[in-house]
Image (cartoon, rainbow, N blue to C red):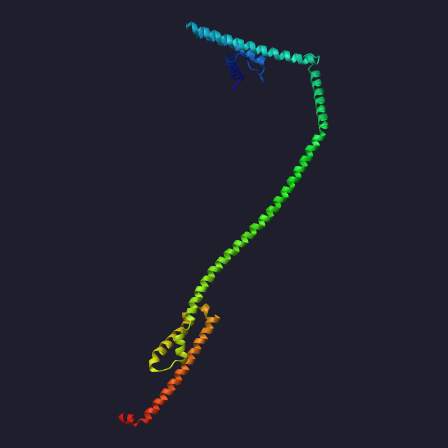
Length: 295
């Protein structure tokens, strides 16, 4: 509160309400009751005079209510004074218990200190008497502490195992990712190899024409097609038409050598056929005199 008067007004108002509703005053603690009663007595007279001056000319019922309020205030004051007297009597009874007067406060304080020391000694003695219980409690605490230590050790072991499991899982996931990537790369490689093998594959009919087919006029178209295919196949295995990374592959080298062998074989057969053909043609022309006469 802002000041003591405001505090006392609030307390006095609360005490009045309690008196009107409960018909008795609650016990006041922490406040000097005598001081509060004196303040109430002094300020009640002032309030009564103000109320009497302000209420002149009002109705009789209002005057009656004012008298009741004043009576209630006086009753509260009397109750406060009564409480103060009761507290004083309690203190005197307490002092009479130790056969002392109010003026012997120092002796009373010393006696209280002695009583306090005695109570502390009694508490220590009681603690000593309860030593078996304390020992049992301490044993229980030690057992609980040992159990907690064991649990901590188990948790540490489990944590270590879980960390190793996490590392293993991470390693497995890494390997799986690598295998997936490798699988994708292998799939792409297989597709590229299939395309390359399709290039390297030699049709059986062309191989037969190049290695052992006849040079009769009815077969010449097949021989020409085989030659065109052989020329295109050899060009496809050269760097401009083939990825440089495939040039040095063993399969490519072997297939190029096979195509070269087909080419050499066909050239030998064609050269032999042409040599024989031109020789027979020259012999025929020489033996046929009519041919020269016509020329």
